[in-house]
Image (tube, rainbow, N blue to C red; front, side, top):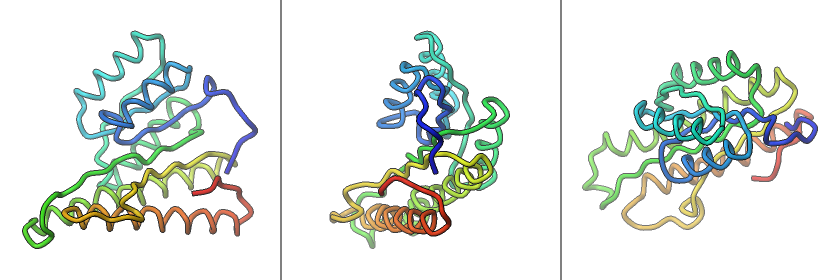
Length: 187
C-alpha cells in the first residue's frame, strides 16, 4: 500500500535488526535524510548508542527494545511507533540469525531459534505493519531476504530454509494485497 509520494523527511520508518549491519547503516542514512527512525533490536545499550549517534547528527530516533520472536514485543514496537509519530510509513523487517555447521551437528534448539527469529519474527512484523497500513490506508513493507532464499549453501540449512520462506511469504503477501485492491511493490 502506498501513500502519495512523500519526502523521506516526512517518513516514519521502523527498522528491526537496527543495531548492526544493514539495519544500522540504513538507520543512520535515513536519519541523515530526515526520517523519524524507530530502532528495534534486543540489545538496548547498542540501540541507545545508535540513537545518540543519530541525535548528535541532528536526526530523530526512538528506541524500542524488541525480540522479534516474541509477538508481544512486536506489538509493543508497533504501538510505541504510532504513539510517538502517529503513523508508520515504512516497516523494514531486517532481522536474521544463522546457525553454521553440519545440519545434524547443530542442536535442535539452535535450528528452532533461527526459524523463530528469521521467519516467525518476520511474520509478526509483517502482520503488525500490514494491519496498521490497512487502518491508515498507506504504507510500505520491506522484508529482507537473502541470496540463500534461492541459492542455499551448505552448512547453513536452517538459515537458507528460513530465508526461502521469507521470499515465499513476501510473494504471497504481494498477491494478497493486489487481490484485495491494494498495491505493493514487487518482491
